[in-house]
Image (cartoon, rainbow, N blue to C red; front, side, top):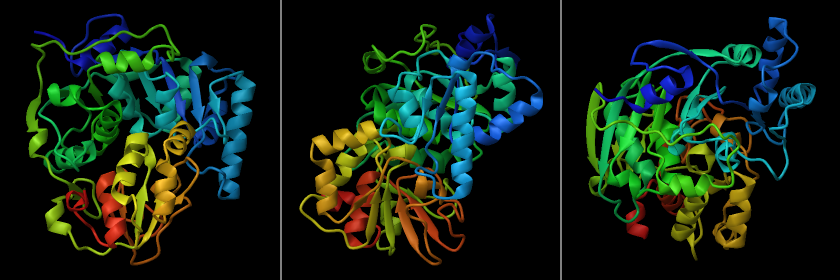
Length: 418
């Protein structure tokens, strides 16, 4: 019997052949953290060691509250700076125009590489699976222990195989697809499992689209989500690699899966996740006409260049009727969108374009909601109170749908605008 991706990646890291449900102890290739580096460093100090096992494996990217919107955020930033300086750790991305949202920046900088094992103190670390990385989110205490010991134990997850064929119709994106998948699988349907995306539908998808799929793996309860590292990935990482330890791994054709699901992208239509859960799926026709107060385009899920361009395609030559906040996922994305005119198109339509960061997604700043307000967002979570107010409502959707809804002031089918 062949091996799944998770069995191969964790077996490689453990130095032996492993199977699903075994417990392995591995050395992570990289440890990613963000603004929570400050609290993690406090726990690290309590362990009683002074030096991280390999400072070059630590990657810290400040993004959740940048620039600091409160004294508490500023203290966290200060502690992160001091900790990384004390460790002599060079992979530190401060609040500068060289930074960005952690999951976007981690990939741009070449830390997300095929076959590596990456842990991050953020649940959406699974995004890196788009590059063939075994990447998973862990808790703060676990991260402090990993810094100190250079080890973490993981149970080898069972795997779900999602076979994807066909191509998207116009106005339909990877976000619409993964919202549909989450609606089918449910938020606990892949608990502690490895979700593998297979098929020509994935091969035809952009890297940005694959990042959107893997980003939302955690919203199905998955331990990790992953796509095959094909030529697109190998071309992208060339010259960026921050490690020589990578290897392009993929599942064997005769691997054993706990479940298989099949989708044809040509059958996917625009959709949303209704409040207040990510698996509360509805096709666009079921919610069209719902009034919105705010539209939000950005985050580690959909703040990439192709996402901004999709919104600009909808908004070109038009004016929005409700406030719309746009946050590019990194300054690299921001600059590219300036160069090609995308930013001008969004500004001309009435959008506010903010600095790269997570702000509104977690209700920290730059777009919190008032009681009774409704936001349509490209983010990854719509839990009650997620955007700063427990009496507000969040619909998750694609960049096309968010932009079309900002035009009309109500949830709208982007295909009608296109």
